[in-house]
Image (cartoon, rainbow over the protein chains, first blue to last red):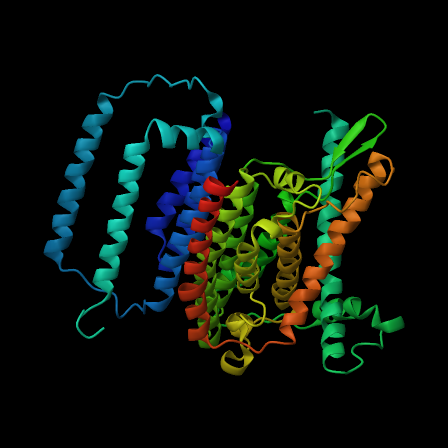
Length: 165
Length: 341
């Protein structure tokens, strides 16, 4: 349990550093560390497959692409957009009201009952595969269709004029 | 798990680490000797008999060179780059089964650091992490050529990772497990996976060349276009780490190929020789290393035979040839599994 709290602390620390870092490339690297702490949490929960997939997909692919795009963008101080004061005031008001809502919600928080899995080995590849392809086959296939449609959409957006290509 | 077991595990880790470093060291020597052989030269032969001490001389030179960090480079990330490169290269060997079990007295020693049941995916994760070392180093150098090299490395690695993953999927369909130990055991007695997955192996080895940034896919460090690629600004041992990481990666990927497709530590007639179990295990380790050395030689053989690709040809090969082939291989394997087997 103490490992959980330590890793959770690290996750939040790195997440805060992501938004407070001045340099965008540093932010991405802190985001990589944040995802790495998530991987450790999955391993602590005995969900090995989820841990390694999180590792490969988020740390190994998506964040590399983030870093790749950021390296190509010109991020000088003079090209940074400067917002007008009205927008700044609106942002402060919006953020403040969100804080009020969060505090109001926190007042009703109780200690949750931890769910104990009947099968502690559920996160292993074999068991996870059996559950996904028997019990949750329809939602699983529907979510794969969702990913496919997102991919088709991205290709459609990337080709500017279908006639010329 | 008693203290003795922990000590044995620790010793195993240290031994594998030292062997990786030793093999990486002598790969540099072998590379120069192989190049000399292909070009009808003598190669390094001054330091010691046959130039056998050349890697030590090279290492000493690397350490004694001046350490330069460019003024406009990002100091911290400039050091993080090569460190990450060598770290990711070294952790890949943790899941490779080097041999069967050794029995010494009452202790049974498993010649594998850890047998996690997602071993293949672990290797894949480490490979995908390897690109960070190159990218961070190239960006932190604050040099156009380094940045171009880093960006090439990132796009190349991501493109070839997809084909590599898809070629592994068809292998997993026939083996039915993600544990490298079980995959190695299944190949006992000539059931090598290369026989069942020839196309998958071809795709895998091409991707392995791309992932380790070896010729013909060494565009991130293409000297005719980019000076030195991502390590243009590096000097001294930090450059040494980048070069060393490449050789360790070559060793680990050779070990993975030998384990996944060429029977790992299995060799023909291993149980009909009439030797005791321990001797069979030791012979198995030697056979595995022989296979690994063959693949390392293959890497060098290709390097000194085939010229470098152009960048658009590299991307074409990855996206338009290897990925469709890998998907076709999955479909064919599926049909074979359902109808014939």
